[in-house]
Length: 111
Image (cartoon, rainbow, N blue to C red; front, top):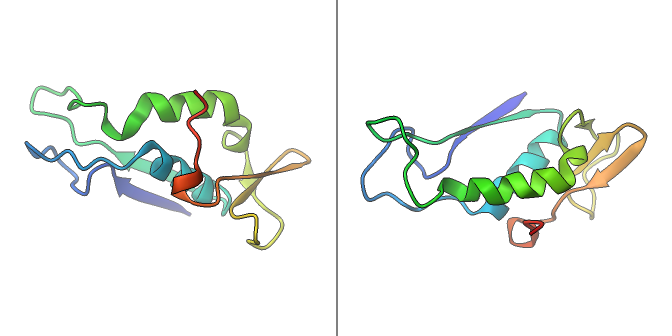
């Protein structure tokens, strides 16, 4: 199971298109998909010269900092053995069950 998404509603680069998903949206979607045993493929359409457009698409560095602090909830994690409950998305990491953000507005960048 997996999900593929674009960072700004287009699979290729489009000049002037800067409606990036927020770091909270990307993080929430990542934890939600991992909690169901899936993988997240996130597309950033590069410019003609192969570079990523500015500003930083989707807050990639912010999501990276969150993963550095909370990577246990993503890397090597599997689906929760519990049904999705009031705590929102959950993932299983070893013997621990870790709760993810409840909504994209509550996802934290970690710094």
